[in-house]
Image (cartoon, rainbow, N blue to C red; front, top):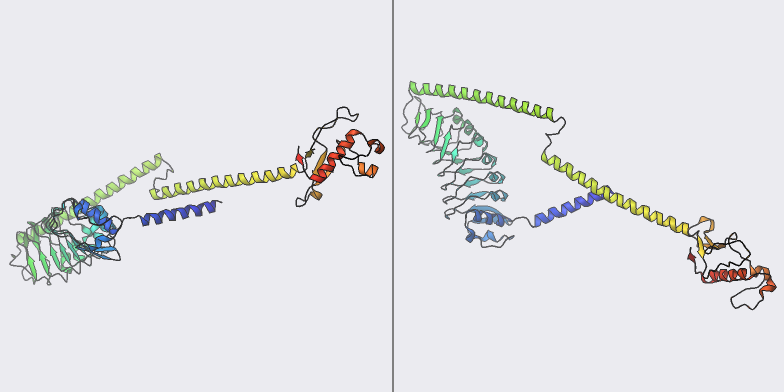
Length: 448
């Protein structure tokens, strides 16, 4: 029973899931959310739960799924809706030259097929989300001319397919991450006019395919340029960078390094090492504090199962509910079966009870011993075989009966003219015989 209930529950869950899919948002509904976020509801010219948006200029679809959005220079304001992450088939997103504000939504990480992402020339603030590093198929990333702050994420080096990385004209600060050296397919790097500082990582020497680099306008950059012979176009204006004597790289009239430059490089490296050690110690201390806190919590709540995830708890609750439902159904089924069995027993028992005669009148004047008013004939099954019809028999202990036919060799009826005196029976016996014959002839039985 419980197994059957579980199967039904799973079936219902599947039905609900299918209904959810039927009524789920289409890509055009997501595009509507984008337009609403941009305060451009007038652009929505299609009905809800349809795919008519694929006919809109700048929108391309394949099998009713949006694959390209090019909405540059539309004067959009507002922010980018987090619903954009539902466009799982999107490979090209162009929102350049609008007035979009707010943060870049983390849900952008769900756009696994995205190859081209251009949010440039807007008013985006906040930081570059680390979720961008999940876009492994990205070839071009353009966030230039915004108001982005914070640092360039270290994970940017995971975008190994990228060809062009343009983060210029923002408010980015901190060091250029050494992980950029992992971008073996990079051809263009533009980070000009930010607030970047520190040295150029030696890992830049691994950028064998880079052709253009623009670092100008970051006055905090110091030290010499790594040897990157493939660079053909470069710009280092308004920086404190220098080039080593005899270096075979694009310098664009960059000054030669002095002893003072090398000292600054050594000081920067020393400070970076101290900072890294300090961060490492702080991290270890925090880890120790967290462990102590967890231990104390566990001491106070022994066996509390605090490490169980929310998902596991929900699953356990669901299983308990299913078990309760199954137990209720099983109890009800068992109760019904028991009631049916009791009814069958009662019927079989009633078949052996006494039968009320059609016209029962006990004779109080009879010299015989008193007899029950409603008992004189018994129904019984032949050899306890329930498949056979019941047999009518007489309980001679309580029924004052004489077989008139056997005694007088006559058949009696209610209108019989035979003298009862000639047969030697009294009035009660005669009436009982008549009633018994009626029972046999009419098969009209009433249970007492």
